[in-house]
Length: 255
Image 1 (cartoon, rainbow, N blue to C red):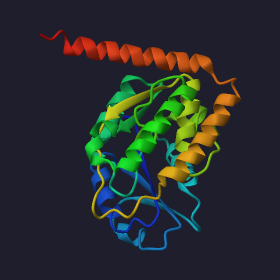
Image 2: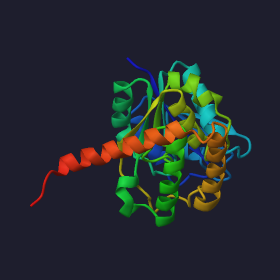
Image 3: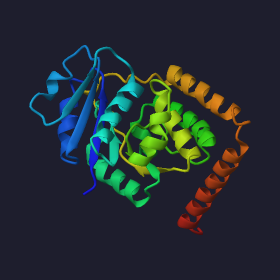
Image 4: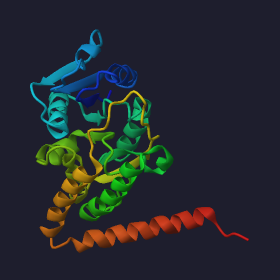
């Protein structure tokens, strides 16, 4: 049987983390929570659950927490890791669909895509994500439906060849992973999931203006270092045209 572990980075998530972990345990047997130096009772909220808790003594950011959790999972024999946030934005019940998509195309990263559910997404987050999608897709050389979703499935190959080699910090890290994965020949699979912004969740650590600016700086460097990577832009334009053509065929003639 394939070994799957879930990795959940958590910073001050005491209000939601237990529910997220309980729901995740119904989908996968191994759950690793990385408590990123929380000042609340995040770790205590997990008391009695069959979960591995790793604690950073100080807040090191999402990137370092993800890497630490994934290192633990793959070292212990996982062949795939699903990552999700501790604030309840990513429904654990959707994990089987992401796993199925990734298993069907082994050289891929499956991404829980939420932008189709625009009415349930705060406007600033939606606009920031759309802006980031275009530039990250250009640098990756393929379409990306939701570049800022951390709800993903990574294979051990993606970990070895891409994720473990990325060095960006904070929220920039997951964008860098998509670019480098695309360049390494991994497909970026969109699996549509509901957009969830729960009333109990704490305010997001993602800052649409500041973090998108940091992501844009990283993407600009990736593009400039490859002479603007025009082949990637051409592939992206072609993919958009193919998608539009497919959508037109689905709608069919009117009148």
